[in-house]
Length: 354
Image 1 (cartoon, rainbow, N blue to C red):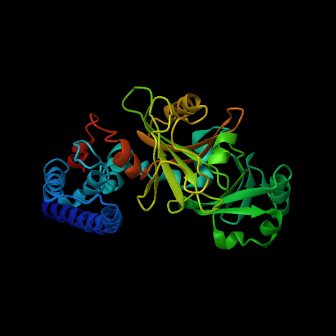
Image 2 (image 1 turned 45 degrees about the horizontal axis):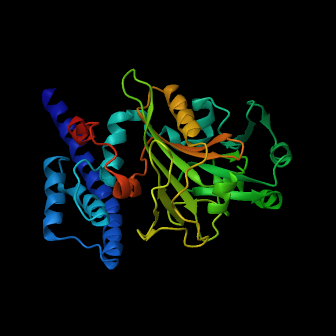
């Protein structure tokens, strides 16, 4: 019996090791692209800086495979700083330990409002396994869904289960709704449009700007914000995604812009490349209210220690929650520009618990 248990344990370890290698290969491929882009901007790395990244990855984080993203951060900042969390370390270590088996629950958009129990998520209806359901739980027809959705709004957004980073999110007018193949799209939620604050509308006119607030809840302590950032659109996209957006780091306490915007290609701008609006001398409207809102929501779900919230705000200060992420919160642009943000939390030791 002991031999059987040993073989099973070793098999699981081997399978996890193979998965880790494949994950690292994919994520570190993105680090290579980032390093190439930064090198073209004159932000190359010396052999000594590469050595520091390699040694820290191996000695502190347990694997040299975590070095590439440390190199990206170092290249961006021009120096190596202890305490940085690499992207692949966040992806395959931290949520697994902090959120456990529930870490992927936020991917099921059709359940988000029911789990969080808040009116701040702008859901209108759900399509699940071929059935249309309103917020009340009433099963209805497609025609009734359309009437309910377009009664008050000129357009809506439909969002797939398992969607992330703007992928699987489509804007639909009434005419487009009629022609849409919901069965092919699969389980999804229909959400009302958000009419954002006029300042953010000026900064991101084609897509709703999202304020990412990452909260941590440990033991019996209240949840607290540990990382914030703003994402604005570019190139006329109507849904912000990981490719066509600009990340604007903000001050954790005040929401004030740090003074730089970073594209997905790791180019830095002091002002929006299209609108010309500066990434300085401004702040996220109603920032403190937004942070407190996300912290209170997290306190309702102590099952999860780490949650990243994508929020929006209107001119009147009404907060809307567009997304929540419990599996793989994005941190790379904030870590590179204003990090390390997680120093002192002991996260560098979490790999030892896996």
